[in-house]
Length: 67
Image 1: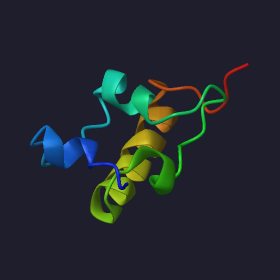
Image 2: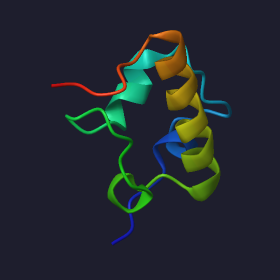
Image 3: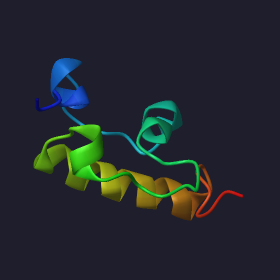
């Protein structure tokens, strides 16, 4: 059974790096980006998600690692 893409379901066209609550859903407890297989996100949005998370980390909205 394949999971539905979260962003397609909720009609989100663009993943914003400032929307930290949504980005946190796709990080594991260590602060790493979860795999596409695990989350069920489509390839297009997985790439956007990775870019958004990296931008948020660089600005300081998300941690690079969490202990």
